[in-house]
Amino acid sequence: MTVERCTLRGSAPEQWIEFVPTPSISRLSFDVTASFAGYRVTATSVTIFAGSFLHELASFERHRAGTAKLTGTYDFALQVEPFESRGDALVSFSISDLLPLPIGRAGGCRLDGAFVVEGEHVAKLLRDMERLFAFDVA
Image (cartoon, rainbow, N blue to C red; front, side, top):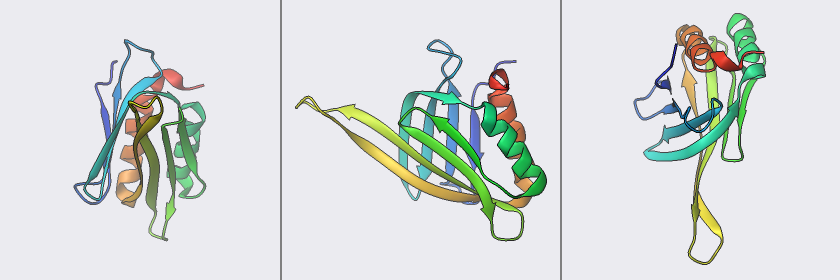
């Protein structure tokens, strides 16, 4: 089964992160776009290693404790951790779009943000991530 894309949504409409697989580059490669507080940044060709993240996220979904960390190349990171006592999840992220500058150095845009996924939606977050990264489960 090929997944076209996966979008994690926060409680507000402008809070989301979208993963689009780029299998022509690698099965570990994704274009990732994050939207937060009126800003949007896309990192292309991000290599993501999800094996331990899926196990950590499954444990988080069951116990609502601990932290699940998704690591990518230097331009992307995501973390899921408990938020308050209602079973909600705080999804925090950092994403960069690196751009070559005409002076021979790199510049770019970086967006660090966080949003809440309400407790009743954490199981869906886990299912979506499992489907997206099914190929990378150890």
